[in-house]
Length: 305
Image (cartoon, rainbow, N blue to C red; front, top):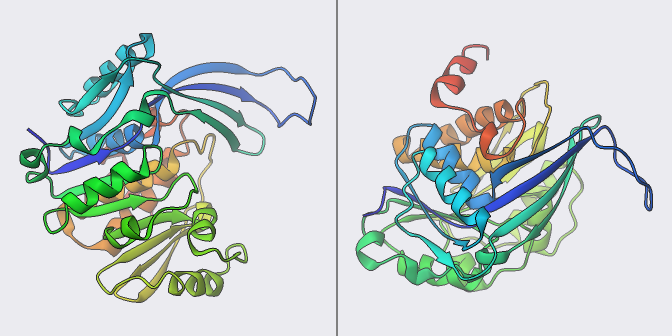
């Protein structure tokens, strides 16, 4: 049994060190604290969807190590359907994250572990027929995403978050209904170097992708907001000023909130507006999945804008 919204993606144990500043090459510095969180782009997005009140399934793999059990229990505690979460005879995925608090930036190194063995066939035909929105990212094998998206053609609205920035096949590109990416990922996909935060440059790169009329694309611009292009028409949604303490997972929050809202409204611009606010709110808390806001938090925060 699947949910109307399903996430096909990665799940990691995040090992996070907080320090004041970024060390120079070869320099040793003291950190302020060390914490562990459930992470992985797929799991983060699934938790974001669930906290916003939507029924969501997570499709992926955890290892048979101690992290695997903890990660599965964490998803269950967040009311995420894990019937299609399988176990792999090996290590779970992990992410090593350095958060530099003075400049509110992070550096992330991911070791894929069990995420490298996620398969399209974990989703049965029966389950696929129950899914309205199918969401994926590039921390699981792109070939498996491509196969699943082809199988889902005509029955699901397929969202691909092209992160991390790796090349994808033309087949996967043409079998995606909505692409969500940041500027770095747009550069990788288009092969064109962008002028930072330059909308004209972004529009030119999008045109170079030669997307079909039914395909939409959203470019996330960090604190500057998001650029939404649908039916060959684009619009900029400005960002929000907040006291950010940790941006880890904010992009995943945006995508999860976007998908959750789109499931209800089927209006991409409204969904992006909602996701933009949810993502800004998430940066005011530590952690990835743990920073995802609830529906009440976002709605109450709406009143200040």
